[in-house]
Image (cartoon, rainbow, N blue to C red):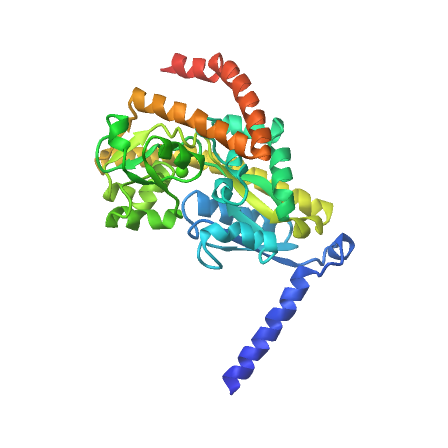
Length: 364
Ligand code: CA
């Protein structure tokens, strides 16, 4: 009896706190001032504090809480805590939570153009992705795509170029890939399908057990830093490069549109600036930790890092062109985004040939 009363009391307190946190629909004026105390929830597509991705989301929550002087307190929920990794979009869109941290290509089934804002096969690397998003019109297109879903997206991290994936047997030709069941999401999965692979999408947390049980034959996740954390080297010994499917994957921070627009301008800026901070910090973290994990995987675990054969890459490149052309033909918004990315990439390639690439060659 007493326990029930306590629970009821706690429920009421939570309800009151919830109402105070939401601030109702009374507009920005009611939400300004130093006494503002918003309690936001952030749903993420990653295990809590998973290296790079989960820690990036946690850092973002901490930064917003600190920079706002506690006017917004953000609590992070890992994949599966509120809902599955693939429900983050809906949770934020509905306003069940105010923020989400995930990757845009997870929403391909809802918004066919969404993958272009995370990774395009044989597309932009991290530096170019940031260039396109921040200075080349990318964010504007992303906002336009997400607005009808009641979401405001921000770049929320970047992994840099990923690895092509883990295989149990060596890949010496396109024939070796045929018939394999591989975890590979987004447009990369469609490309693999064209050359005979069965692509599967699943949250990162399920990859190890699926590889171990034989439910899948191969998997791509991110790269040494993250793949070591999941122990993928314990179930596959061959790691292939380069990550043609994800040359510079952008992560996303999504904010519920009403929650964002109800913020006073300074708090809107704080959210935006904190996202930008995490975007660059995460790339710095991947750049550094991947080097260390690469060394560990190679020298302590005997992993073989191998380049995909040239003819396999050529087949994938050809399939990627067809997949991208088809994506553009099937959906007008995808066509618009694809035109923007391709134009950007053509200029970036020409410029980087005499800048970044020329320097890499010179440094060798
Ligand atoms: Ca990946």
